[in-house]
Image (cartoon, rainbow, N blue to C red; front, side, top):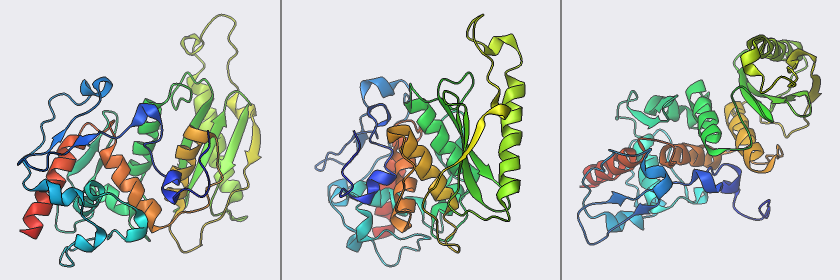
Length: 305
């Protein structure tokens, strides 16, 4: 079911909507001197051994607002009211985007890929999003989905973020419809041939990977001829030329297609960027989620003591 368009824009980027991809339901004990993350039963095996750090007086932090963030906090990217972040999410946001904390600290670990604070900082406005962020989105959606696959053998679609001449766009391989779909938030007739050529190279690479019989599901299975798929260019909203938002558009398309098969993203802005950063850290697929949230609370206490 597609959400009402009047609902907050966070629907556009929120990775928590799918039942298989919930955030860890943080259980806050306001009258105690610690905070405990209690994952659902099906996620406990993934998060085994991750003990939260001690946190003091967290009850007040849970209900805090943007106005409670000290102006002395030197943040690369500061939350605002229109981002609709909860108290816990505001604490996590300040921990992600604090300038003096090590950029090399790993905040997301999904097993196959990870992202550091430095990578997540590229989600700040006017920054070029790095591939670690988009790889994290792909990995999380892959873990969350039983119907869409970003690995071979494929059942329906393959999503491939493409980087060409300082620009991100999205290649979608629709196996069932035999299409190569080109989705670009900053179309440029001068670059069209180069971008389409790069897509064909990916198609040929995948075609080469499937040459062995081990890729086929059975004796009667047809080998996909990716290079012969029909090329299709989607008509999508365009970003501002100076916005540096192309990577965020690509993340949005992958998330929306995963949930609703919809590429009609209408809004990419600072709130989109902040929401994506916080969601990626707090998702249950992140094996460091408990640790990162607990560290965020401890860091807040230190900064506001």
